[in-house]
Length: 237
Image (cartoon, rainbow, N blue to C red):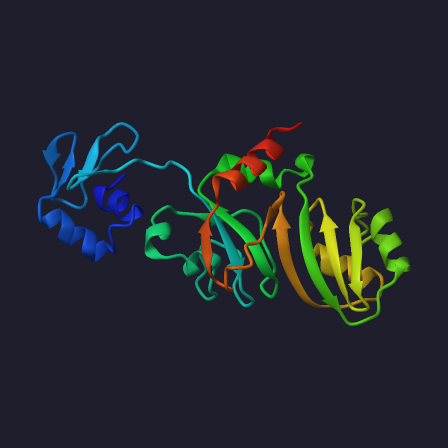
């Protein structure tokens, strides 16, 4: 890893600011002063100081974001704004990517990480990771729709979904709980019942609730308690 990337990840400023720090000769690697921003270091074994501050390397990072509408769930796109574009420069250095996807017009909780193993487990169909959404629709909902969700719904391509939860909050608003993630699944489940989704927001993933203190587009690191919930869940067979 380049020394400027490592330093930037720990909040010492933008690329330009990090280059200035290096130029001042206050960065050392294994006791040797380093001034070249392209110097390669092994972050897991090298002892790196910025002044008297020891850099403690983090291999993996986990972030919760409140995804706004109009942003796609991707790491990079030539034309569209992605969730990774909303990260600050410090977190962009970590090369994070979204765990799964939310539709462009769907808002709410999405987790970003650089841990491919974690993402693989979280998205594995065998894990049946629970996802919770709020959905506003254009038709009145009742027990007929709730029973249909509970029994599983056959989609337009013939796939029959796993049993899902539909908790009706009022005539046209419901909480939806699914344990799989087919393309546009919730919208297609409602469409199979002759109902159109107007607005959709994910409020929980794998037992982690969206921090409602995050404005659309804002993000924060997962707390240790939140990480423990996910790790414990994904460790189960």
